Length: 474
Ligand code: SF4
Image (cartoon, rainbow, N blue to C red; front, side, top):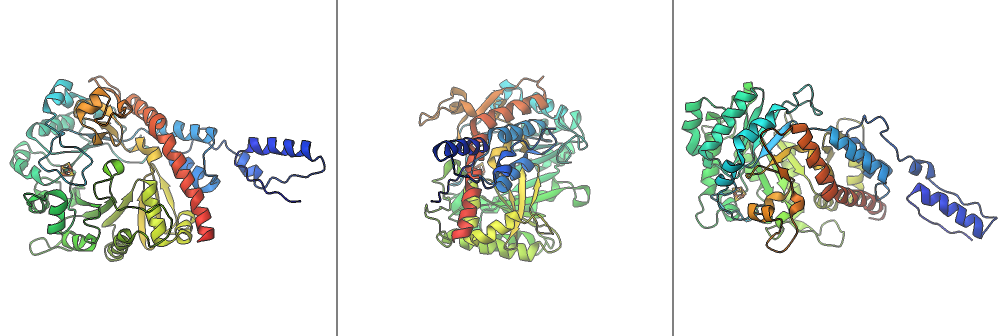
């Protein structure tokens, strides 16, 4: 008689061997792959990046779950990876109410920012941020104004940062309304290191997604890009103008048209309006907002919307990434990785993420796994290891974690969402002007790991296990 028993933990394998021996003394149980399974301690000297350990956990061990020891090593590695980036949400209100927006409609947070002393917190944040030489990803210190809109006092924050730490690069994410402060930038001699203004489709679809009532936001975004070079350093000094398109059910067929409009130039803008055009998928936080959905039954071709988007992404990679990297495709969620898998087919996808050699081989760097499939280079940032991306400070001076933006300040401060969800887990703690950036980062990493990271890691590991099964059966 022959029985096949599949076991994932080495300890269980040993126990199972003993049980079989007791029941049938003549049996010679064979444990296939037992040695590899027993090897759970990967990083005894604490030398690896969390991403290296992550790749090993989900791709190389591929057991569908991650053992406690390895999980702990990933967490320990995360604690070491103090980012060189601080993201600050300087204003919670916005002039628009985009259908895909992660934020809810909210009143101005200026008073909360004044009470928290946000300018002092920004200075405290950059003071101890790792230098280029100290950073884990070999990048110099950066500060991003995460939105939602720029107001005049935010320029005081930029000035204070520059004064405290001249090597910090400053970036702004905006919808085009910053234009009204161009003179103020010039008056203060302030220049941004980069500016990103989103364009979410051709004029009709951008306005449908972002501004269905007034229908003026497309023009504002384009105006913002046309005037960007007035506030951004020149390209030779490292300045960069970029645009991000968030993929939704409204705009998934507009990718090529937008890339062409922004990258190939038009009269007066022969070099194009932007240096870089990025495409990303919609945040899960407010899924009713036009997410390209995934049916529960796995089958390539059952996500026609994403199929169309993927073909367009392939085309823009073929056209614009020959000599330099002008386009980028970034995903964060394992559900989006699954969309790509369904579109290209599991075998091809598995080959792409397993191929560790050559120009198109998979690369693992801090917080991301980069792989090329179907001619598209995908920058995948697994949510499990999010904290090393940035230290996030909200408008009320509280250090919060990713996706906290889906709740209003009031919900976050009371710890209860309107629907009754406990949302305390999104807030780390209120900062004061003496806070230490590395220490605070470690608090943020611990909170994320406990509340979100480990759970996400389990989902990621489970997907890559299923991927192997799908690659065999499909
Ligand atoms: S997506 Fe940006 S511009 Fe649109 S409502 Fe949200 S914060 Fe404002």
